[in-house]
Length: 243
Image (cartoon, rainbow, N blue to C red; front, side):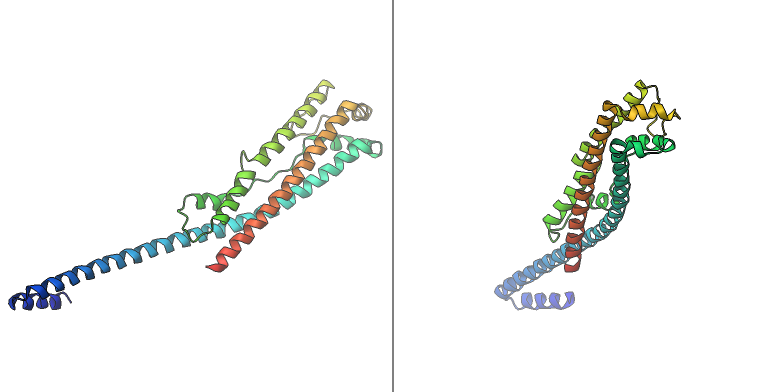
């Protein structure tokens, strides 16, 4: 091809046809420019496609993470419901609790369930350049979920502060009553009559009811997280199907 073009230029120069040579040279320049633009366009398309593939892979990973999140939330919420039921029994039907089970029910005051969202896929996504083909609404929904429920997210802080407050109140109260406690261990064995005296005390009942409230707040947080996850999954599926 280059030899052919060179021959044409040579013939035009030999014939002294400068005007034709000028138009030919201009056409050759335009042809080169078009070739460069096409090459750039193809390169941009390739880069965009690579970015789309990387984002798609991250979204697939996020979807898998969120499916696991849903499973973890279900397990945490199931345990949370059991704790709430036990604490309600402790505050309302304590007389029906056998002596040898009082320790167990009182210990429920510092048993909290939680779930930590898996962020591996979202961490990948944050390192990528998001192509214009990815809907902004999808990225916003994902960002809202992880901002809300990871680390210092609003829901985490709200529950954590309330839960820690109740646990500290419970521990301080029990220590005042002469029962050293540990966050991860049952209270020390005690005479059932002393424990019954404690659970009938209004201050203890207030701590227990406040703890029930914090667990109910957490249940609402679990429900909110599940709804946001399902919304994220639906948007991810819709986007991936469109590709």
